Length: 326
Image 1 (spheres, rainbow, N blue to C red):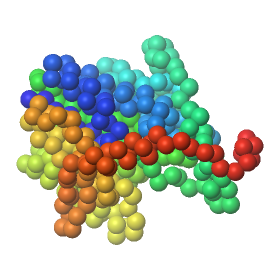
Image 2: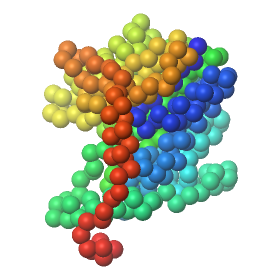
Image 3: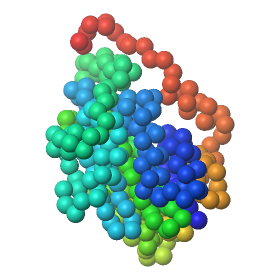
Image 4: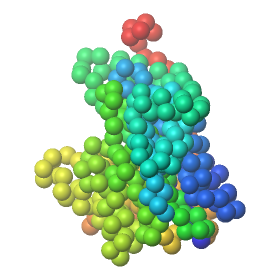
């Protein structure tokens, strides 16, 4: 038995590539890295890697994390700039007993010393998004863009190893140095090969308040299915935060247990996920919140999939005077 589950439609190509190799016997650690690197390298996915949307200073700061469920090895980077594949750097850091989570200049120094590929991660398309946002908000105080889509992937290999990984460029127009949940073990991801693994996407500041990925694995350990654990964790976080904060940000999660059973939950509509197992070819599902704290999960239609890629790759035009914000 093997399996993979990932957040958002953007993980489809990576999971498709990695699952073929999982079927041939590669490790889940390799599979998760392969899947996430595929997303990091594609410039039209604007919340991860190359082409990711920049911070308020028009810099692309990237976060990533990796966790091995066999031995709890962890590695993470935060606020790293101009390196092609932060997931690979995070995985490399997991091989050490200490110094597993590096940020900013320290993470970049380590990556350079280890020979990881340098790359200018700010694309012309991302610059247009940035300048258009300035144009739209020029009379107002800048506020974070509502999009904050982390790619998170869980992999289970034929040896029973569970691994989780994440990668994100974080909030559009975020403050320099801001970190969300994506590189935080327990919030953005968690893996235990004896139980299961989970990863999260959404507003990091709220996901961290529930340590939501660890909570899902804990709930699976208590006997809940991955689906029930995901729904319970999202509902519990909503119930805790809503009375105290009135408004709760986007919370979306995926999980897989040691037997390859999977689940997903969200507090938004049309949260897309990708699942591949030894019994299921890579498939995109849409997850929607419904009454009673449960979620409805159904395969995405061909029309939805077509519209998704059209919207991601459509040409962009810069608003306003070309020199207005230079």
